[in-house]
Length: 552
Image (cartoon, rainbow, N blue to C red; front, side, top):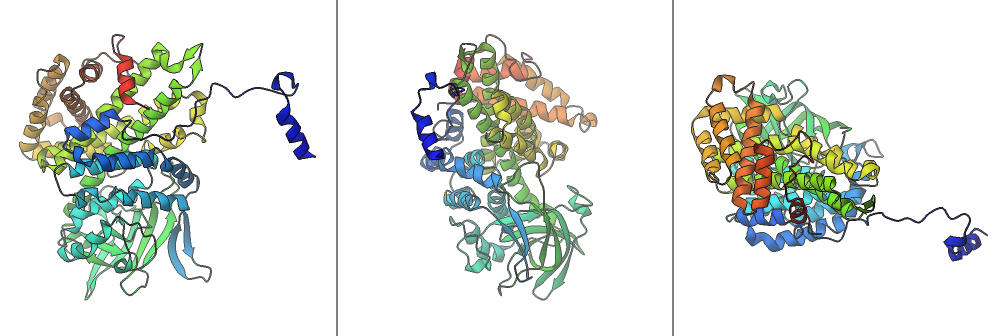
């Protein structure tokens, strides 16, 4: 009988059916089946500008994955959070994390396309930029899996401080194969690397760590804990522990060469605001075996080489998160009407979308330029760019994503949309790998250590001198502000914000699109802007900014 009723209902003319309530109309179609690279003109131009155009085919291939298969995978991996399996059915301690198949597929796609290794496998000018662009694309599909991919990528410079370990591990962690099997590293087709630095009592102050390393005949034994241990599914971790010489760095494998489990005890998985597809944990080390990386007492300096690259991915990831939010907002507004016309044609909505597009392009340009400076060995400049860029890009993401979410109305607050996931994710990168204050103090340390970082900063800004009066005035004010080092620390957020804005302005002025550059400089540097998005001056060419941002 129910089937007969259903069949008869399907045949009824809605106009004559007294129980017909409404037609579903004026709803945007799902955004899928697009190429996230080819539709991103600002990214393509930045990649070319920073000497990585040769990687275009690889980026196009992954762009198709991100706008295709990765969409559904991202939803599935975040709807099915990792689960801690402390014991097996027989009571044996296993300390494993169980993931949904979608997560494993995401990791496989990421490694297959070199998100973790492209720069190391293609050592040529622009390689770091190309890898950052791959990471930028990946982050738009799923942010959580970027954690192990980023750490695996960033571990390479640190591991090179231990040549024998590097000889063994670099081929494993630059492999294009994802191998989630729990085996000794030597038996796997590919490996991932995580990190364990912070502890309960110190947080970012890792010199306050109490975890200790005891030297033995076959390496070191580690006793202690980590408050944030990312990510517990990896094959090995770079960890910090105290020796007689001070904080030192070690490589700690999950499975020992003889096939037994290392004495790493997962206490719990973090119940996080966002980043749901990824597992973060608290652990204890019960005499866990590890090998030294770098000299005793050099742990902070050694692991900071890893941290420099994870910070690059923080700023890149925040730019990518904003990019995905922007794309979703423009797509929605191009396909939904209100008050007789499409949202994208409403003057005030144009202002909002154009302003968001401006923010994303500036963030993307700064991230790619930072990767380029690292690639070219511009160390003094790279240190400023990395810290200032991480501070500013990551700070802008929560407000920007929220504004993009608002473009959807109530639909943007419902979990069936990607927007709540983006909003939960948005604050993370400003906290991970050093909060905003830590980044600002790093900038000050770089400026105060010698004159090279300051010289590199203003040399970079001078490349755009004379292109815009608002830009020139702001650079001049920045120079004056930096002439008073006695007040640097208390004013460091203001100083770093102004540095970041000047750097973004310089990059856009040199980027070739004068509409974008002038809109940025007049609004961000010239004072023609309010405190909220959507407050660009009326003379702004809104349609140009929106069309440039999203060609989908």
